[in-house]
Image (cartoon, rainbow over all chains, first blue to last red; front, side, top):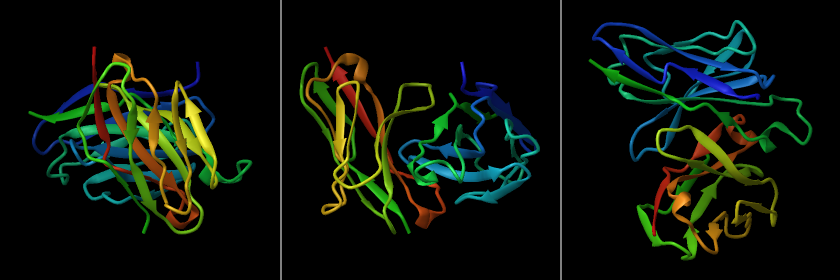
Length: 119
Length: 113
């Protein structure tokens, strides 16, 4: 089945440590996204990538980094500069620009998330 | 910029009750509108969508109509079930926001037997 796989499901970080969250999709989607979810705040966009080897900052990019070396993979690194990393992280993908009917008509498909906690 | 406002929860209903979750939006241009559902411990699943004014999205008994004149996209279901208990997110996507999804804060629905 096509879908988005996030791993691990639970992750613990020590103070001063960088951790990397994995996101892989086999939907052949061009665009991929990372969101952070906190209780009562909905989803906030961290980074997004509309094509391989290109990505843009979202609304809360500070303390995070990404790479997009392959179409199917979009890992997120939570660096030690992120002072409040405890949250639920969601990865998503969608058909990119050039899709029939326009990109804005296309929904985003989500993984099951990674819950990050601080030790 | 784009924004989505949805009714605050939590919403608690008895099984077979009628559900409405209000959603209004502001956006540049002509956005597409979506409802997503999140079950406990899981990611978001697309519930329904509408891409132009007066379109009605529907799925699993849920419906929402794109109302341009009132900038609204209210979610409704005629008879809820215990299995509908989840968090519901209204979202929009427009060219004015560089195709990013803008979410409301979510509404927690609990359905009691």
